[in-house]
Image (tube, rainbow, N blue to C red; front, side, top):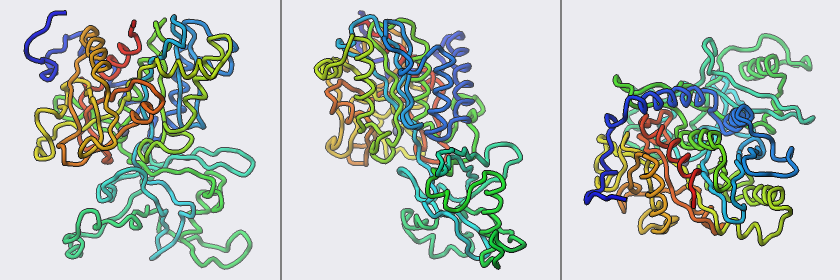
Length: 470
Ligand SMILES: [Zn+2]
């Protein structure tokens, strides 16, 4: 391959796209925005992904006794994760190609006993999920999404605040006129976690309760009555519910030139959607392709729907059993040792509003292409999964030959903070892994921004990786 002396990959431009590529990019971004509006929680993403996979010829893994090259299968993990695979031509023990991303995003979860009345208002108490700047979550329109599971197993889906004509919800903030003390506080203290209470109503129930008793908290009771009428749930049902307050914003083009997309939950749906589209567009890959979409990344990849769970190994074992005429532990270990993975997660983009947080030679830029991060971590690479030079070389080759626009970088200034992804937990399974994702502005805020070129290159890059030949 011919080389230029200077690395051109760090100078990609939006205007370099051909008219045909720009058209594909715009069409892809329209699909992505529509998907984001339907999939604001991990459960909704898993549900929509299942439908998309079925529409694209994937069958539930348990419906197949044997697997042969070209077969398309998927499983849903407890309603909150997805594994989709296209069986490759080569024996599975030669390794699988994984693109792993997460489908959970920062938000406000309802507490187990959420509903209370105070000062003639009814509220939901929340417990924030993931790393948030708490002040960003006050006075923004919120919608409630989730499920309540009843004692008989019936699951009631709850979604209110998204449709035109729906009411909205919010956390209030102190008016500036009275905020002399608050304004002197540190950002981390100005909005205490226990003040993130969602306002639900102000009208009182007029009447006796369902046992004929006088009602003390009439506003709270009125809300219970409304919930009972609409969803047939009672206060105890919150114990077995998972209800999340998420920003009620729709995904929209950002800027007069429409070169970016603003949305809630780009992290990490911009990568998980790309991985989903890429796996569905495969025909007969050389190596079995696995799109792995996990939950709980934002709180440390814990739990049986997170990357640290045995779910991935267990599902891979079942695929090996059906593909290789029987399972053995050695086959599973061999498969994992020979596998390669892209940890598909977002990275931080250069923000001209905060240049001091970046090291300009090594921070990805918006619309500069897919961000390739050899390592993450903080300080002295603490907690980083550091991809080997050999894997980086393989990736360069795949991306350069596939016409993928990409850029290499790292996470902010050396001493400026840091972060991690699922990469470290994948690496623990003896799998080669590298972080590759879309650069974002305002990560973990209620409205994040990403460049359209990068959004599209995530899909193209993951597809090229799945299509690897060696
Ligand atoms: Zn993420």
